[in-house]
Amino acid sequence: MTKKKKKRWADHYTVKAKKENYPARSIYKLQEIQKKYNIIKRGGRVLDLGFAPGSWLLYAAHSTGEDGSVIGIDIKDTDIVLPNNAKVIKADIFEYQDNELFADNRFDVVLSDMAPDTTGNSFVDSARSLNLAEAAFLIAKKTLAPKGSFVCKIFFGEDFKAFTDKVKGYFKEFKIFKPKTCRKQSKEIYIVGKDRSI
Image (tube, rainbow, N blue to C red; front, side):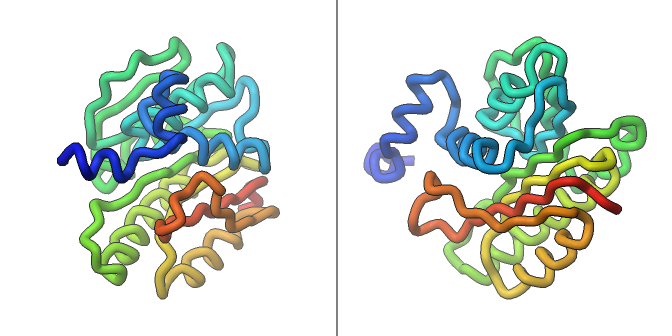
């Protein structure tokens, strides 16, 4: 990546994240979601899908406190210093969906900030994003405790409504939310399901 491209994508949130020792500006998206919907509770158990580079993982670990726990799963490595109440697993979620971790654990929150490598083709990018969102939702259905919550990023596309309607049926409260900290040109949007009812 060239210095010119880095400079173009950097903004005051990027600078702020660095000052506050978070690896990426995405921290402020989850912070907005948490402030608005109060998803993560003290002492809660959180599963963070596609956690790298680690901003959501660190924020979730801080929010749950010492009595809580956070597990992050990603195909990429991370060099962040993990809090005592967090651990990470290097794995591809498409190959990890039947792992015993999911059979033996019930999480209060499942988070997914996963995004595909973009191609510039909006149809292809939204289809890839949908695949990740579907995988995250499948894991959420397997692992969420009763009354648990689900937060998932997805790119807006032609299958957006069909997917959100499917997710909506599993929760008593369902919202579609675009944080102010999302870049204006981004097609990303977040779905928030609270109080699992199925």
